[in-house]
Amino acid sequence: MERIDARGLSCPQPVVLAKNNIDKIASGEFEIIVDTGTARDNISRLAENCGWTAAVRTDGEDIVLTLKK
Amino acid sequence: MVIGLIAVVLQKMGNPPNMGVCVACFCRDIAGALGFHRVAVVQYLRPEIIGFVLGSLAAALAFREFKPRAGSAPVVRFVLGFFAAVGALVFLGCPWRALLRLAGGDMNALAGIAGLVAGIWVGILFIKSGFNLGRNQTTYASAGLIMPAIMLGLLILAIVQPQLASGPALFSSKDPPGSLHAPLFLSLAAGLIIGMLAQRTRFCTVGAVRDVILVRDFYLLMGVAGLVGGAFAGNLVFGQFNLGMIGQPIAHTNTFWNFTGMVLAGLAFTLAGGCPGRQLFMSGEGDGDAAVFVFGLLAGAAFAHNFGVAASPKGIGEWTPLFVTIGLAACIIIGLTMRKKI
Image (cartoon, rainbow over all chains, first blue to last red; front, top):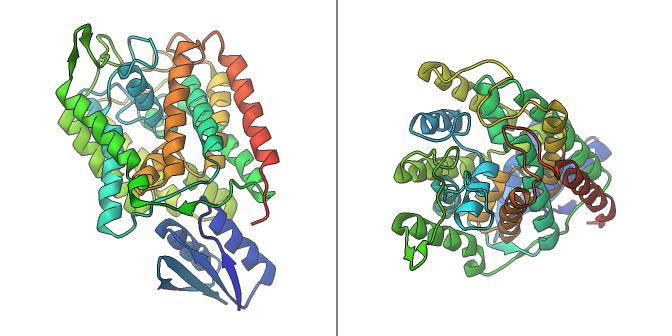
């Protein structure tokens, strides 16, 4: 599965990366890895607004979101 | 909404009119209190700012979101903070105060808000075409605590009001707006509450506009609408609402420079990743780059007042056009030249 690393990026770069990929693949599944609660919340809301589902899990210090449509 | 209400109550309790909380103005007042600029009417160590950082720290610690991080183009962030302060002080307010001025009936705020949106829009164009400042890195907990520690130090100064042989160590305005302030501990408590709430809700005025333009997300904009609504309702209750353009408190009527100043501020905020309030909250969460932005704000605010760049109720300063132009040029160069594949 494709995995995007958005750790350490300023707002709104993580959302932009997720949005770009959603626009690119239109449907399917990918992971995006972030390291702040803000990025997690922003991407979850983006997914919801675009009709995707976002599953969140933590991986040590990181947060992994799996986006599906 | 809570922020809007608290702001109005702080005004009632002594803070300057339509300025219950203003990050740009209050950083300028702090710069003045520390003697970094010499404009006697805007010198007061505003406890709200201290509260924002410490409140955010407390919430971040409680919810395990304290993440010490740094190292994403700090000097660029300093410059962005510097010019953000310049732009905001030409308009006479940060995005929060722009909203509070609107909620108080000051129609000059519309030009500032339009400028802010325009600046954010330009910033988004840069972001869409690949602008970024690179990744930060996890750093030491003690490094993430530097900004909160500095704020604690300022708080001690504000409470103790130490005396040197030559007089008080801190400068303190005798005349408004610097002399207008709510009691210290009330201001501090308000700041702490706002800091905690904003850390949890990710409240950001620049993010609100940006998210709507970029991804059609209205979540943060609802928060902004709440701020205006809360302040508007509070102003009506306290009889602080006064519709018009002329004679508004701590404002001038030069629409062109109200607009252009906020274009500069909005662009600088967007390139740096958030409004000045948000930068304070992030610095409380351990973000060293946001802390550097805040130091840029302090330096820019001091510079703007020392060199006739900041506006006053009488109008713009002698060097306003020059430095707003330089700031816009600097932001555009930053936006165009800092693109790295990530």
